[in-house]
Image (cartoon, rainbow, N blue to C red):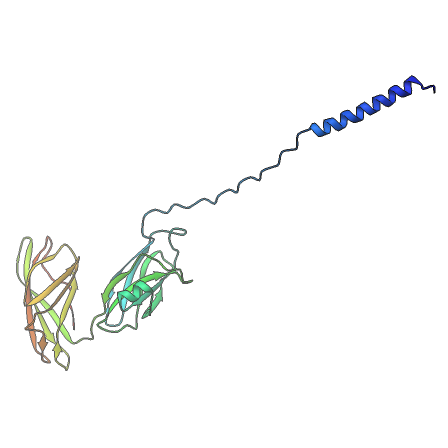
Length: 249
């Protein structure tokens, strides 16, 4: 049979090209898989080592406490006003946020005072802070702060002797109610650097500028209208004097 050389050559060329294409496809490396980009981490806020809020009892009556507060840090490290102030009648209750006895909201100021009323006379209270939505401050447990007793006695002071750097004073405690006084306590706050170096006819307790003098074992009972006295020696760089005194049980 007679075959045209050009046809045979074209067929051979087509076969060779087909084989080369198949071989090239088989030898091509697989396309690399794309690795997803790692997620961008959320930045962590570094809060300074400071209390986010601070508070202190600065005034008491028989039925109320006034707390001065300062919000030192703002969110996310602190708080924005208003804050809730809760009172408890024992430290264990305060630590567990259990059975709050009273509560009140602060004002819109970051530095201010809040007064909580309706309290029981002659009772110790501890306070804590929380946000109105329930987020509790884990740090501050303030107290104890004691409400004064109903007026059952009065206390007045007289400066007996004074010298540069100090003075002595006598305090008269008198039962002012219609019933006998069974145990008394006189309290005040020094306005300056005063400190008691000695006391007699009473037991003195100091906490910074705050002073409480309780009766001795032999002069705590006073009949209606009766009185007793205690004395003290005070060191001071200022003028000799005793501030307003509060007397109660």
